[in-house]
Structures are given as C-alpha cells and as structure tokens.
Length: 295
Image 1 (cartoon, one colour):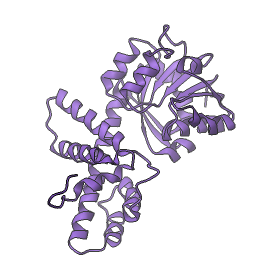
Image 2 (image 1 turned 120 degrees about the vertical axis):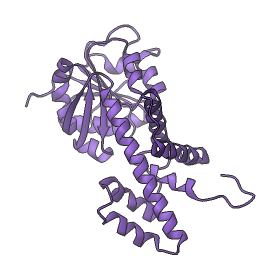
Image 3 (image 1 turned 90 degrees about the horizontal axis):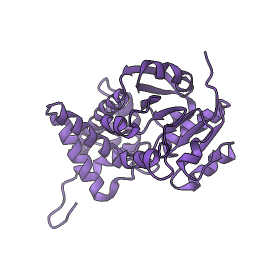
C-alpha cells in the first residue's frame, strides 16, 4: 500500500477531529492542528502535533488538510474567513471536508477548487482513533485516487461514491436512519415503562433481538443507564443533520413522514436544553407535559 507523504492539518478537534489527529500521529504522520478553542489542542501537542493560531497557519507547508468542524458556518469560517484556508487563494494540497453539511455547501464553499473531497464518516470517536471508520467519499476520480493513501490510514473501508457532494449525501442518509432508529427505540421503551414493564429488561430484549441494528444495541446501554453526558454524538448535531436531510428531501420533491417526525422530535428535545447531551436524549421530548408546565 502506498503511504501518505507529508504533513496533514486537522482543523476542528471535537470527538472525531481529535480521533483523526491521534490516529495520524500513531501512524507516524506529522500533524498540525487548529481548533477554535485552543485548549483542545493540548493533548495532541503533548503527543507530538504542532498547534496553530488560525487555519491558514495550520495548513502552511502541509500536503493535506482535513476539516472536521461542526457545521456550515464553522466550515465557511475555516475555508473563507479571515485567515481561512482559501482566503488568499487555492490551497496547494488535498482538501478533505469531513464536516457534515449540505452537499451544495461543500461545492459552494470550495468554489471550484480542484483537489477537494467530501467524506461522510461512519463511526464514533473510538473508531476514528483506531482507524476503524467507514468512509464515503465524493470528488473527482483522480483526486480520490491521490487521497486514498491518507483515507486508508483513517478507515477500514473507503468507498468512492461519485461527484463532489456524494459523501455528504450518504452521510445524511445514514444519520437519517440513525435518528429514526434511536427515536423508535426510545419510544418503545417509554411505552414499555408507562405500561409497567422494566426499562432494563425491555432494553435487553431489544438489543438482543433481530430488530436491533448495531447502533440501537450500542445506544440501548446509554438509555438503560440514563447516561446522556460525554456524548458520542450530540443531540444538536443529529438535529442539524435531520434538518439538512429534510432540505434534501424537499429539493428532491419527496415527502418523508418518518424523517419529518424525527426532525420535529429532535428539534423539540434540543429546544428543551438537551442539545449538548448524547443523541439518545431525544427521549426527553417524548414525555407529555403535566398540566400547567411547559417543555
């Protein structure tokens, strides 16, 4: 297998970005890092990464840059804002957009820049840290081929789907499924508890059944423990992705009732103040308010 050559910048050090940077360091790749809140760079600098004050400084002298920020506004700032990667012209390396945004936003923000890929990442921070992600990639064939050595360091499966934006389309579809599945499990458990059944026993039955996907089995443990802190995937980010998926459906002329229901429930749970908890916190939006209270 051809090895990636050169230094890689990782911009955005949330759960996934930190995992990606740590994985690259483990593989002997020189890494430069940037994050809006600088203290998040400290564990990585102790491991050998070089921290930068802004995105343009982070990508200086690198052969590839991975953007793993939270949303479209953050990606716009990293790419086009003052001291952004593309603020003073094209970036000479390969640009990997791993932030989950609307497919059209990737195309708009990169502005015709040729060496760009959008990558939908399937997995959690542990998968990112261990190189066990599944990566779904959009972009030109020659750009994908050139970026493959880097992507193969990060994922156990790397799939080229087609044109730029394809990676985001796949990511939104997968998160659509995840959002509906987790909400369906939460609904079943709330109904069970209201009917007098033991939550733990019901969750064990769901997780061990043929109906459960791996993510449902994984998330069932959080629901059983009522543990919403230290999120694997924040509720507000799931809400954002369901809103993006709804936009994609609208543009395609589709009405997707399950998606719309999941979107509305996730929005409600986020508005209740659970946005920075794990996405299983959608369960908080399922309880009917008592008379005279507001949720």
